[in-house]
Image (cartoon, rainbow, N blue to C red):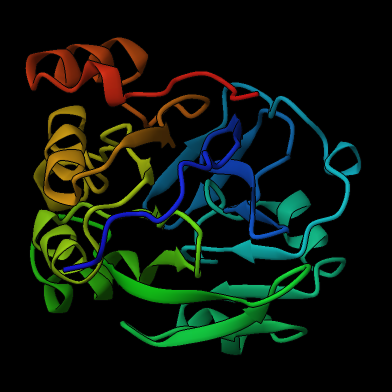
Length: 262
């Protein structure tokens, strides 16, 4: 098990829409799954993905980005055309092993439990550890041939709170494994929204639904949960209201952070 955070410092997370969030940690600025295209349809082998709302900021508005945490590169609701263009201006993209090979140009793949040390702005380092994520119901062997490889991330550093970024994960078993190593977590950025497709897994969610997002928060001992990946796309079947209801029912409403922090 991880140790209690040694600081009361709160990580400022700005949710930009879909799976995209910006946060500063140890003096570095991190961006999750960049999606900045205007609303549009994307043709996919399994059908059409429809983006219904724009991001709340454009890449040019964000300022310096030191690291992109990219859960996977193969779906446009996690990396769209504008997001792909942004990667060329970012020194480091951390993603799946397969994504690291496909993207090149400063991208590094992280296998499960593989870590990289990043120099902080100031003294010390930040450790980013790749952690398991499964993009659908079932085992990795059952799911990955259909929806591909996904990775989550845990960020730690001396005197810093622990941050978990789940990526497109539907597995509470994976969350349990992460909790065994890193709980309690200070801030969990959890991908939610219960996206479903009738042609995949009999319509079961391929990312956490709201109830399981609350269960993940409890498993992690998360002090705060910032949900992403629940607004802006037609295939997201649960939104803000369902998240509030699930966290309230679980007695965790006070941990759910749905707004921009200052």
